[in-house]
Image (cartoon, rainbow, N blue to C red; front, side, top):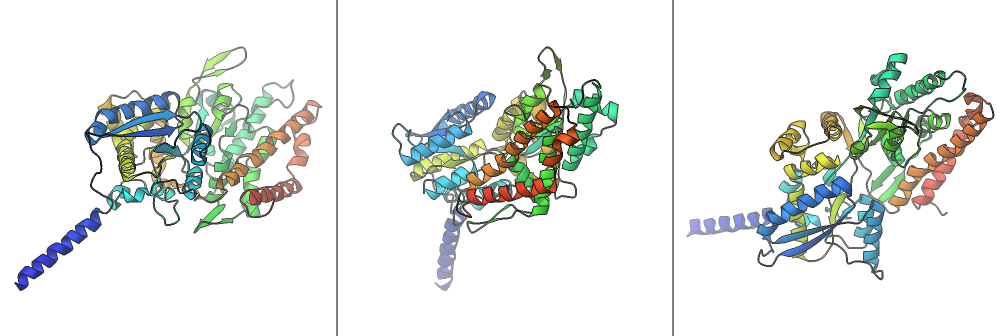
Length: 487
């Protein structure tokens, strides 16, 4: 009897333990005979939308049919259009569509929706074993709830790379001795851009100061956030939902000297909507942008009266000299609207399927996005999926992904934690210095047109006093946007 009691007790303990370990692995509330219909809002367009729609169709015909889940995807246009549609739904605006079951979201927007109490707790549906399959930093980015539970499901990520017009670079390098090695640091990029300006200026000795810009970058906010991180400073430090702004003058001076000064002098440039547009028109030779921008790198330069084919080079994004090897972690994840257990469970089942290595790499090979599972982030796995699924992958996208896979071990991917007014603060980083540089460059060009030399025309913009004036106005704008002082 004593042994029997022990046995029963042990069995009870095992049952309790099994139940607690199952935790998130709840019994499926789905019924294949009565399928659940899910709507997904996203911002994919063109080839990305075609790839996403194809995967949804595959899911519906296989796993979805088996489990009782039917998914429908709807592109809302741009990221901004999607965010507006979500906000209108939450606010119950007249004419707004009902909230979707799943939607693409960056962390700042997801944080707003979470504050409104409209997001499902994904930790209820994912156990420890599930979570450990994903890249750790991607999961951490999604823990935006006050209690640290998961709200953003990582589905496709990106970082930054440098892309170069190889054809024109080789001509410049042969004439001047410029080296790709110099482009590994931000200071090296600035020095190379100066040399390129001077070389192109020398090609037309009868026309003074007509040198051309070498480099530009998309996403200025990344330049600030990651540049400061490389220099040992977390500009947005968030703990327990409380924000501390770190804006030390010496580090910000290095950012100013290596973006604003080259922009004002014409060594850097920004002309079209994206820097890949500027490479296409021949106004730039190189840029730093998202891995997902690789597909837009042009096949040829198109001048007003001529065009010519170009090849490309993919490199890791440059890092500040002596800085830490940080790179941006970006890309929207998917969030699930708070509803009922059946819809939330079904949504997570779809997202788990979409992020399986084979499916995620199939999407990434078209979109340029990085897969989110640890096992999927390798050239070997990408090659395996391409062969098994007989995928046709653009060489630019393939080279971009494999470049990042190769660099991954030496990089620390970073994204700041979400905080109230995060979107407004990020806009200051995005536009404050960039807008000033564009405005001041026009003034310099006007002075050049009046016969002044570049040094004379730009002199008043690159002084210590000019930096101090910008630094103070920048800090004021950032404090106001973050709600740290009254406007």
